[in-house]
Image (cartoon, rainbow, N blue to C red; front, side, top):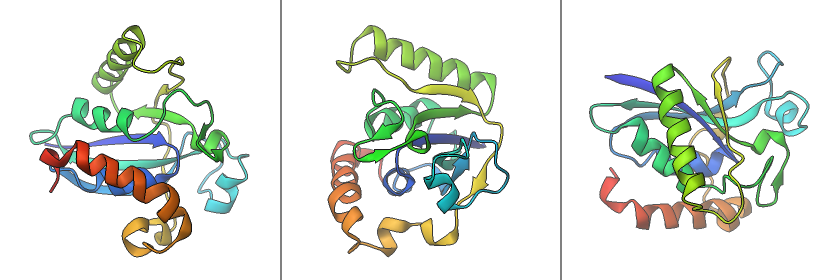
Length: 176
Protein backbone atom coordinates (compact mmCIF):
# COMPACT_ATOMS: atom_id res chain seq x y z
CA UNK A 1 0.00 0.00 0.00
CA UNK A 2 1.29 3.47 -0.89
CA UNK A 3 2.12 5.72 2.06
CA UNK A 4 3.96 8.98 2.63
CA UNK A 5 6.68 10.06 5.02
CA UNK A 6 8.23 13.51 5.38
CA UNK A 7 11.67 14.10 6.87
CA UNK A 8 13.89 17.10 7.50
CA UNK A 9 17.54 16.14 7.91
CA UNK A 10 19.57 19.12 6.78
CA UNK A 11 20.01 19.93 3.12
CA UNK A 12 17.42 18.09 1.06
CA UNK A 13 19.96 17.41 -1.70
CA UNK A 14 21.80 15.01 0.62
CA UNK A 15 18.87 12.98 1.85
CA UNK A 16 16.95 12.91 -1.45
CA UNK A 17 19.82 11.09 -3.15
CA UNK A 18 19.89 8.41 -0.45
CA UNK A 19 16.17 7.73 -0.13
CA UNK A 20 15.80 7.58 -3.94
CA UNK A 21 17.97 4.45 -3.95
CA UNK A 22 15.89 2.34 -1.55
CA UNK A 23 13.88 -0.65 -2.72
CA UNK A 24 10.22 0.05 -2.02
CA UNK A 25 10.54 3.81 -2.37
CA UNK A 26 8.32 4.97 -5.21
CA UNK A 27 9.36 8.62 -5.27
CA UNK A 28 11.25 11.26 -3.32
CA UNK A 29 10.48 14.94 -3.70
CA UNK A 30 12.34 17.85 -2.09
CA UNK A 31 10.22 20.54 -0.50
CA UNK A 32 9.46 22.76 2.45
CA UNK A 33 7.26 22.05 5.48
CA UNK A 34 6.39 23.23 8.94
CA UNK A 35 6.38 26.97 8.46
CA UNK A 36 3.82 29.75 8.25
CA UNK A 37 4.57 31.19 4.80
CA UNK A 38 2.33 29.92 1.99
CA UNK A 39 4.18 28.58 -1.07
CA UNK A 40 7.67 29.72 -0.01
CA UNK A 41 10.60 30.01 -2.37
CA UNK A 42 14.04 28.50 -1.79
CA UNK A 43 15.45 31.98 -1.25
CA UNK A 44 12.83 32.74 1.41
CA UNK A 45 13.42 29.43 3.20
CA UNK A 46 17.21 29.98 3.13
CA UNK A 47 16.73 33.34 4.86
CA UNK A 48 15.39 31.36 7.84
CA UNK A 49 12.33 33.56 8.38
CA UNK A 50 9.56 31.31 7.02
CA UNK A 51 9.60 28.66 9.75
CA UNK A 52 9.88 25.98 7.06
CA UNK A 53 12.44 23.19 7.05
CA UNK A 54 13.99 21.73 3.93
CA UNK A 55 12.38 18.29 3.73
CA UNK A 56 11.87 15.31 1.51
CA UNK A 57 8.47 13.78 0.88
CA UNK A 58 8.90 10.03 0.43
CA UNK A 59 6.18 7.94 -1.23
CA UNK A 60 6.78 4.29 -0.39
CA UNK A 61 5.17 0.88 -0.65
CA UNK A 62 4.81 -0.24 2.96
CA UNK A 63 4.53 -3.87 1.85
CA UNK A 64 8.14 -3.62 0.59
CA UNK A 65 9.74 -1.09 2.96
CA UNK A 66 8.37 -0.11 6.35
CA UNK A 67 8.27 3.27 8.04
CA UNK A 68 10.67 1.79 10.63
CA UNK A 69 13.18 1.05 7.86
CA UNK A 70 12.83 4.57 6.48
CA UNK A 71 13.52 5.89 9.98
CA UNK A 72 16.66 3.76 10.16
CA UNK A 73 17.95 5.58 7.07
CA UNK A 74 16.77 8.96 8.42
CA UNK A 75 18.77 8.54 11.63
CA UNK A 76 21.83 7.35 9.68
CA UNK A 77 22.07 10.10 7.05
CA UNK A 78 22.31 13.07 9.40
CA UNK A 79 23.31 14.08 12.93
CA UNK A 80 20.11 14.36 14.99
CA UNK A 81 21.99 16.02 17.86
CA UNK A 82 22.72 19.27 16.01
CA UNK A 83 20.11 21.90 16.78
CA UNK A 84 19.02 23.92 13.75
CA UNK A 85 21.96 22.88 11.62
CA UNK A 86 23.76 20.10 9.80
CA UNK A 87 27.48 20.72 9.57
CA UNK A 88 28.05 24.13 7.97
CA UNK A 89 24.38 24.50 6.98
CA UNK A 90 23.02 26.64 9.82
CA UNK A 91 19.46 27.74 10.53
CA UNK A 92 16.09 26.31 11.53
CA UNK A 93 15.50 25.40 7.87
CA UNK A 94 18.10 22.62 8.36
CA UNK A 95 16.57 21.24 11.56
CA UNK A 96 16.13 17.55 12.24
CA UNK A 97 12.41 16.79 12.08
CA UNK A 98 10.03 13.94 11.43
CA UNK A 99 6.68 15.18 10.15
CA UNK A 100 4.33 12.30 10.87
CA UNK A 101 1.29 11.64 8.69
CA UNK A 102 -0.74 9.59 11.19
CA UNK A 103 -0.73 8.38 14.79
CA UNK A 104 1.02 5.15 13.82
CA UNK A 105 4.00 7.06 12.37
CA UNK A 106 4.00 9.32 15.43
CA UNK A 107 4.15 6.34 17.82
CA UNK A 108 6.88 4.57 15.86
CA UNK A 109 8.99 7.74 15.59
CA UNK A 110 8.65 8.54 19.30
CA UNK A 111 9.53 4.96 20.31
CA UNK A 112 12.59 4.82 18.07
CA UNK A 113 13.79 8.23 19.28
CA UNK A 114 13.32 7.14 22.90
CA UNK A 115 15.24 3.89 22.32
CA UNK A 116 18.11 5.72 20.61
CA UNK A 117 18.23 8.22 23.50
CA UNK A 118 18.15 5.56 26.22
CA UNK A 119 20.89 3.60 24.45
CA UNK A 120 22.98 6.76 24.04
CA UNK A 121 23.69 6.08 20.37
CA UNK A 122 25.08 9.63 20.15
CA UNK A 123 27.14 11.40 22.82
CA UNK A 124 24.84 14.44 22.76
CA UNK A 125 21.05 14.50 23.23
CA UNK A 126 18.81 13.99 20.20
CA UNK A 127 17.07 17.25 19.24
CA UNK A 128 14.89 15.83 16.45
CA UNK A 129 11.37 17.24 16.45
CA UNK A 130 8.43 14.88 15.90
CA UNK A 131 5.43 16.90 14.75
CA UNK A 132 2.30 16.43 12.67
CA UNK A 133 2.59 17.44 9.04
CA UNK A 134 0.66 20.69 8.70
CA UNK A 135 1.74 21.76 5.23
CA UNK A 136 4.08 20.85 2.43
CA UNK A 137 5.29 22.78 -0.60
CA UNK A 138 7.26 21.19 -3.41
CA UNK A 139 10.69 22.74 -3.99
CA UNK A 140 11.55 24.35 -7.28
CA UNK A 141 12.23 21.88 -10.08
CA UNK A 142 15.98 22.53 -10.17
CA UNK A 143 16.29 20.96 -6.69
CA UNK A 144 14.89 17.60 -7.85
CA UNK A 145 17.52 14.85 -8.30
CA UNK A 146 20.14 17.47 -7.54
CA UNK A 147 23.11 15.17 -7.01
CA UNK A 148 22.42 13.16 -10.17
CA UNK A 149 22.01 16.30 -12.27
CA UNK A 150 24.84 18.32 -10.68
CA UNK A 151 27.63 15.87 -9.80
CA UNK A 152 30.34 18.48 -10.38
CA UNK A 153 28.81 21.03 -8.00
CA UNK A 154 31.34 21.79 -5.23
CA UNK A 155 28.76 21.36 -2.43
CA UNK A 156 27.81 17.98 -3.91
CA UNK A 157 31.46 16.94 -4.09
CA UNK A 158 32.32 18.06 -0.55
CA UNK A 159 29.09 17.29 1.37
CA UNK A 160 26.48 15.31 -0.57
CA UNK A 161 28.66 12.70 -2.31
CA UNK A 162 30.52 11.52 0.85
CA UNK A 163 27.20 11.04 2.73
CA UNK A 164 25.69 9.29 -0.27
CA UNK A 165 28.65 6.92 -0.71
CA UNK A 166 28.70 6.05 3.01
CA UNK A 167 24.95 5.39 2.90
CA UNK A 168 25.32 3.09 -0.15
CA UNK A 169 27.94 0.96 1.63
CA UNK A 170 25.87 0.51 4.79
CA UNK A 171 22.53 -0.10 3.05
CA UNK A 172 23.79 -1.92 -0.07
CA UNK A 173 21.44 -4.87 0.49
CA UNK A 174 18.41 -2.51 0.37
CA UNK A 175 19.26 -0.60 -2.82
CA UNK A 176 17.47 -0.72 -6.16
